[in-house]
Amino acid sequence: MKILYFAFLRQRTGLGEETVEAPADVHDVASLVEWLKTRGPGYAEALRDTSAVRVAVNQEFADLHTPVAANDEIAFFPPVTGG
Amino acid sequence: MAVRVQREDFDVGAEIAVLTAGRTDIGGVATFLGLVRDIAGGDEVKAMTLEHYPGMTEKMLAEIEAEARERWPLDECLIIHRYGRLEPGDRIVLVVTASAHRQAALDSCAFLIDWLKTTAAFWKLEETGQGEHWVEARESDDEAAARWDESPTKAAG
Image 1 (tube, each protein chain N blue to C red):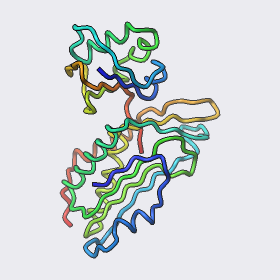
Image 2: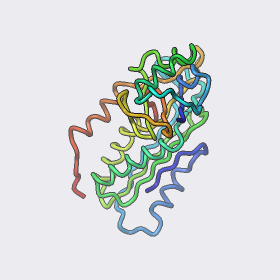
Image 3: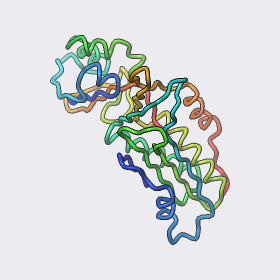
Image 4: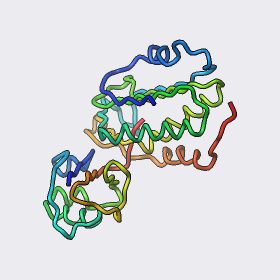
């Protein structure tokens, strides 16, 4: 799956996007977050407080319970501040 | 549908001229132009960098525009939002709505900018004398957007 990070999440993880092969037990956003946090201190720091993080699956707003699959595009970002 | 996310500046007059060229059914055009302010939360802002989510940002803006067209009888609608590094005084965002009558144009323009601030995927990194920081979402913006939930105006033309 393709993972995108924006704003402070991009800075903490140190990358804007990556393609990962998640373990079989990653089936929703919550389990994906838990797995990503094990990948390094930058990830753990970026995803530490999920109440400050928004997520989109295939460019639609999603939540921790949204299912994810191998070909999905998942984006993590803070609440938006446009305009 | 007219939604543009771009690095380049835009010319408000030229955009309105294009939108209304040859149209005799439009009676009113409302615009909102957002500029970079030099003070934010008491700190002097030297510049800000706008980041967006290519693909999703455009899609969200298009959805917001479709919602406005559902609620008001709009003849034309245009949203331009810039990204990249901008300095105080620079134009950031333009919303133009055109309708047969002024109320639909004015109300839909206010709706679009309120919704855009809380739902379109943009993030602002401000450069101040104290260093760089990401602008946090504001509750007052959420409240401004929420008032449209309470009064779903099907404005008469």
